Length: 265
Image (cartoon, rainbow, N blue to C red; front, top):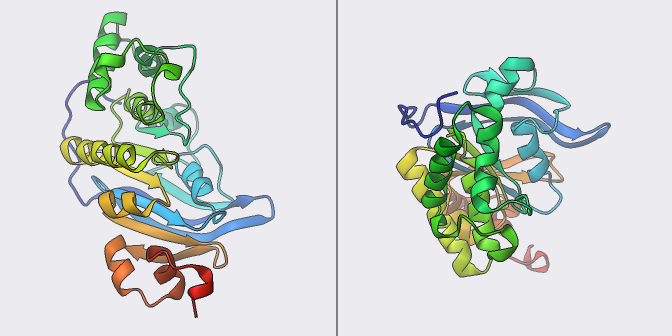
C-alpha cells in the first residue's frame, strides 16, 4: 500500500483490475447467482444491475470480501481475496474503498474525522498529515467547506459524497459503491454522477457500482452486467446504451426501456 496522498503511476487502462471466476453467491443452500464469470478493467466504471432481489448487493459484498462465496474466486489485481488471510488479506483490503448504500458515516464524528478514521488505523502519519490529506479528499468531492459539519447537518447527497471521500482515504485504486444514487433527487444524483466521472477520468480510479437508476447508468457506465433472478446468472454484458438499443432478450429490452410487465408479449 502506498502512502496516502502520494502520486503513484496509474495502471494501464484496459488491464484487468478484478477477475471473477466461477463465482457462486448465496446463503447455505439458497443460491442467488451461480457460476459467474466476468472481468473489470482498470479505469472502468463497471455497473452491476438487475431487478429487485436478484442478488446485486450480495454479489458486491462477495467481491470486496465482506461475504464469503459458496464457491469460486475473486482476484483483485491478481490477488485472490476469497482465500487470502492475515497480512495478505489486509493488504488486499486496503487496496480498495467501499461506500455502503446509506453512506454509513459515524454520526458522532465530523466529516474530517470520518475521513481520517482509516488513516489513523492503517498509516503512521502524524495528525497534521492526516488532516491535510483528509481535506484533500473532501476537496475532491466538493465538501472542503463542510469539514467541521456533522453528518446530520448535511444533505443526503452530501453524505454520499463524504462517504466517497472516506472510501478514498487510503488512496485506493478501486472503489465499490452500493446504490450511490438511492434516495437522491435527479439534480443531486446528476451531480454525484459527475463526481464519479471526474474521479474516474482524472485519477484513474476503477469503480464497481450497484445501481438500478437508468439515468445514472447511461451517464457513467463504461460496461454493465445484468443479473437475473430466474436465470441465477448474468443475462447481458456490455455498453448499456447498446444493450438498450440492440438486445433481443425480452428481459433485457424490458429493463433498459422501462417497459411495464403487462406490456411485454
